[in-house]
Length: 90
Image 1 (cartoon, rainbow, N blue to C red):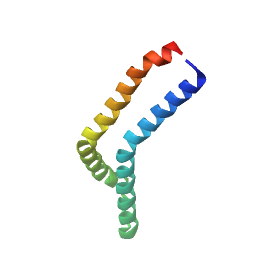
Image 2: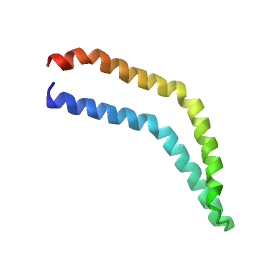
Image 3: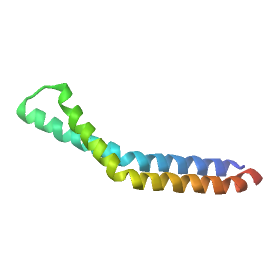
Image 4: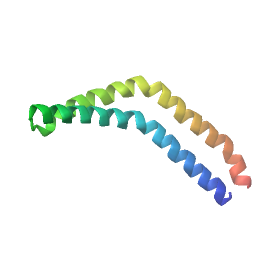
């Protein structure tokens, strides 16, 4: 196993992780930003007000994106397991 193979495997793992986490993180960020703007406009200073909308949106995104996320994870895992033979031999 060469250094280049290890670096490529690490890059692929980081790309896959970022790809899987991005829909959840971006939706939570957008909801938090919208709620913060509404709080600033209405001058409501309640810190716990953002939790329920964020939880609801994250749950909705998880339900909607779960098949795609599972497909991405299984594709990465299959590629990893099929490439193990080449990695060990080199």
